[in-house]
Length: 90
Image (cartoon, helix red, strand yellow):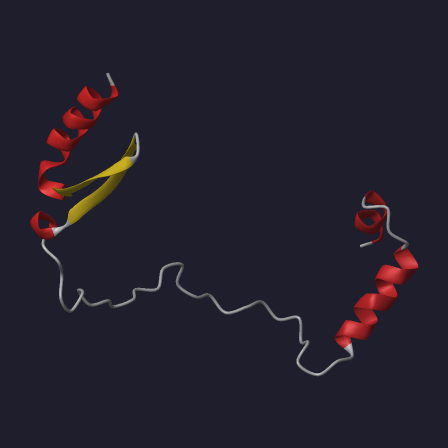
């Protein structure tokens, strides 16, 4: 124990004192902890009301001059929205 304390720059007398203090407290029997499983399985349920992805929409507002252009697009057609935005940017 003393060599480990010295390796870490600790006073060996203090380490011995701390161990005696801990050993004297109730519940500190220094016995190894019981083995517990590394994985605990949890049960989970599916969402109560899942929203189909084809019903989801994306809303975008684009400022242009003195007006704003609003777009509402279905998520299922997101690649077409990307093409439109690329065309507007050029």
